[in-house]
Amino acid sequence: MIFAIPLAWLQLKRERMRLVIALAGIGFAVILMFIQLGFRDALFDSAVRMHQNLQGDVFLVSPQSTALIAMRSFSERRLYQALGVEGVESISPIYLDFGLWKNPDNRGTRGILVIGFNPEDSVFDLSGVMQNLDKIRLPDVVLFDAASRAEFGSVSDRVNRGETVRTEIAGRRVTVGGLFNMGASFGADGNLITSDLNFLRIFDRRRKGLIDVGLITLKPGADLQTVLTTLRTNLQDVTNDVRVFSKQEFIEYEQNYWRSSTAIGFIFTLGTAIGFVVGTVIVYQILYTDVTDHLAEYATLKAMGYRSWYLLSVVFQEAMILSVLGYIPGFILCVGLYNLTRNATSLPIAMTLDRAITVFCLAVVMCVISGAIAVRKVQDADPADIF
Image (cartoon, one colour):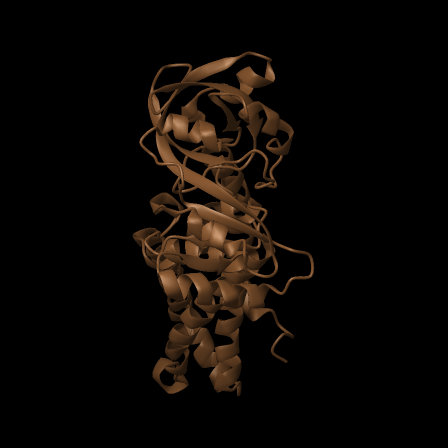
């Protein structure tokens, strides 16, 4: 009986301009939620690109380190102590620091993350790194992240053309020996990889033996939790100058910093909430106006014997129709906006199934809440007052 006559759809399309405005408002709210959630997820994903590509099982960091952009050094001796734990196969010290990169095109400077490690170790699972390990063994040779922001210059294009690119990093003359792909993040606009010796040449005030990340690889078949417990007992609890993480814990530690210790994560979440509230208000105004304009018709239906629950269902049907029709253009536009943002910023922002479902559910809830508020006007439709 409810769907025998498409009353909800007929009422919506009767005022075509009002329907277009309503869909535009809902689409705007959908886009706002998509953009905010997309940037939030890109923040978390880009922050752990390096972590995800490290070929290790256990990681040591200083307890004073809060994130990749704020690492503190600790003694390499702790890493060698870990080598004596049952189940540990190999260790690799990693150096991290930011230096001023001189754009080889216009000589402008910009901060870039420099990563140093022993080329004898298989530290990164990245395209371009393993193939160029021999090159970074040479003095003052670095690998440039081809997915860095464009402000660092046309380094990738020049290397691909076979040109020799020489520039400066932290005031030291270096040569780009090859390219790899990792990508920018909110903390680092670009990345360089080089050997540990070249790293210490570039940052000549850094002391050898003071590292930023200790990478530990376990023997095949070794129990991760047992090794973690032993390392925490023998190193973390005793010396109190290192923290021990599994790879997943290392990733979550970084993401938690951006989620709870910075304003950025809160801002994106707040933006999503604002989009939800804006959409709710817009849909409510549309539904309330529609109910008010058709109040006499609702009263007539009541006089004909239709129960209030039927009239209420009509309003909720309108809300559902608006949520679906408003979501579709918002979704399509956001796919294009994601591509535009990814190309402009090198951030890992793309449409995902989980996010598409999440925003669709938010759009439906948004419209249902608006409908629930607007139906109070239908309940006031009294045939005795109107006739």
